[in-house]
Amino acid sequence: MEPSVRVDDFEAVERHRAVLQQRLCVVTELGDVSQQLVRTEPLGSSDVLKKIENVVKETLTYLAKGEAPVITFDKRSSWENIWFDGNVGLQMVSDSAMSKVKCECPRSIHRFALILKALAMIYKLVQSNTYATKRDLYYNESQLFGSQMILDGIINDISCMLKVPRRSLHVLSTSKGCIAGDLCYTEEDGNRVNCACNSTAVLVPSNVDGIQNLKSAAKFVLVVEKDATFQRLLDDDFCTKLFPCIIITGKGVPDLSTRLMVRKLWDILHIPAFALVDADPHGIEIMCIYKYGSRSMSFDAHSLTVPIISWLGLLPSDIQRLNIPKEVLIPLTNNDMRKLSKLQKRPYVNCQPLWKKEMEIMETCKVKAEIQALESISSDYLTRVYLPNKLKFGGWI
Image 1 (cartoon, helix red, strand yellow):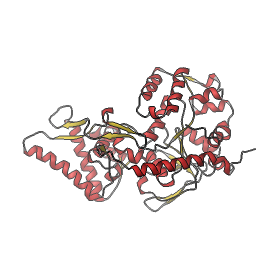
Image 2 (tube, helix red, strand yellow):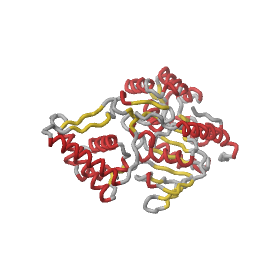
Image 3 (cartoon, one colour):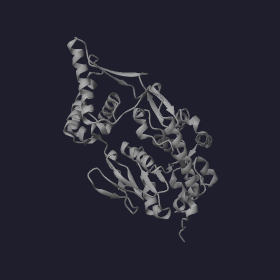
Image 4 (cartoon, helix red, strand yellow):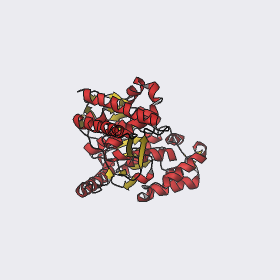
């Protein structure tokens, strides 16, 4: 017999929501007093065009003086540039460590040319009020850029340099994330989307910023690490069993669109968000990207991070508590141990003592477990027992 979810089954979630809303009011009242931080601001087309023109003018000024042009922007790969705020996440500090791409340097002249080419492509998009995905831009000049990764890095460098979000550059990500549950919204082209849960999910739109009329009665958002787990939730009719809710996955390390979507759900609905990830260093890191952001995108933290996300499972302590069979556990590799050690040194761990304790349990036991390990207890344990009980009794940290 399938369990029925009563109103009081969401009491713990509702209490958690009330706490989050109180915290939101306090953060809003305090405001952002850190003027030294790099922060992107959405701009109109004319302002973006002016910023690009200023970069070109500066290059021409160097040449007019007989000097080699230099393009300078805040360094995205350095922890020296990072300042942590528990209410925002990992943010970039202005003018701490800078990247300089010099035209005269043999090692960087090619990258200098690629940045100018990317600026020209962006200028054309903004001027014509058209949008393109990073993938589109790459295949238009695949021989020049060499790899998608190189172009992606350059686009992010430009976004950081101009201090505008990537969507203001009219460059979109090819979305890989999926979403389902009690959610309806209108896309920029007027298409009305209903994410009502069924055997198939809805692809997260590439232009999340263009979403309008977002409606939902969901009590919570469940952020799922892996597509396999997400599909299992759909197959087990999770959204109906724990109606109303929203589930979303970035299918591993989340793309920008999925992160923007999770942030948008919080900004509009102000409901709790819970992370369901594997009990391993990789899963924890992915959860931290959703919650606190990443070093490389720290300049856009205020529009990407969701600091209210709580860790629902799979907790390393759950492995012992549920007596999960040893044969389905996986020994931590040397790479796992190194990643875990690095995670424990991240600036946000000190403000999450319960997370730190879970990492210490993993480090001591030297094993990891996938969410699928719960199937060793029973095939539908995840959706029939584990998640309902976690949500009913407040089993998150």
